[in-house]
Length: 229
Image (tube, rainbow, N blue to C red; front, side, top):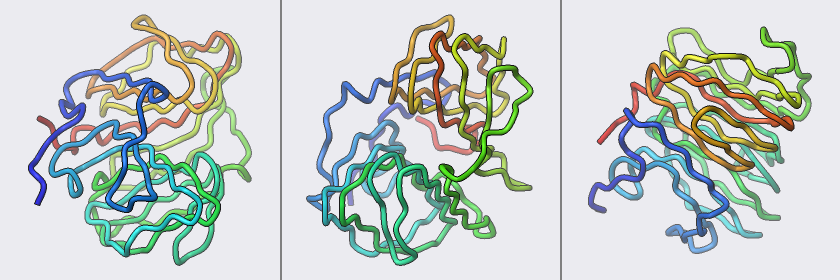
């Protein structure tokens, strides 16, 4: 069994990572590569947030998901026994779900493991590319809601910001995570480009804006439920 370790494991701190500057690291599969953004616990069984790249014809052995699994397909195709999921597909697999993932053509996914406990969560498959953008309470920002379930703290969405859009000061009572899919986001602390990952602790606040427009994944809430070191 691997010894416990951590990457960006202190949930009380703000973290920003430019994933473009990270190198792909091999997984036990040999044909699946990863960039680990967050890890608390043993290397292969801890809570982890990663970018994962499947080579063409790559596969993983059958495995269960204690604590659940969240996936956003960023490119190519991700597959399992249920079918093929193309870029833009969002998946939430509840605690205990078991599958044998693979990719015939290759693909890249954003994945969070062991961060969605609760065996009565719904299993979610959303083809976000077929959804319409909906008006948000903030002018210039549109939303696609991916996951929000009663009795659970997380709310996951895609947001599209017009050039120059800003919601003013934003507070995250339950913390938040952001992955910038396209464009650039800025706030009083810095500038974050495409494929930057941000994590905000419980109670954090900032005043974000996008000078040229952007699209991003955001998960609000649930940070306090994660293990911390």
